[in-house]
Image (cartoon, rainbow, N blue to C red):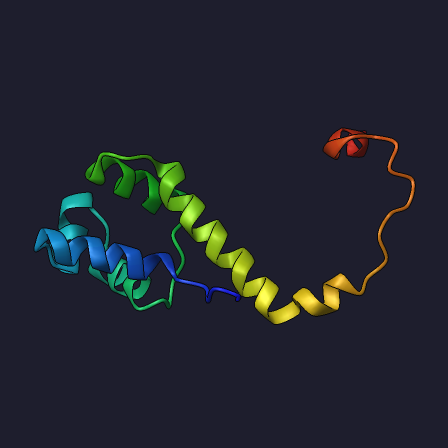
Length: 105
């Protein structure tokens, strides 16, 4: 069973609802335009590094937490759109090097 991608804005909306904080209040508290938070919550905008830093600071977690949510969402959406096509692409056969170390110049 494949789980559907959940936009980080849904998680942000759920957290704000539990705390009784409106998107406009959060925007004011973290010093961003209100439409940035609203667009994130509605899934029309992703979480950037700047927004992740601000959210991490306000929620008391980390910017990485918020960016990881965004990255996981982006990868899941990409996989839903192109995963089957990508799986049919050729795979490198000379797997002598480990990891990305062999890609360095």
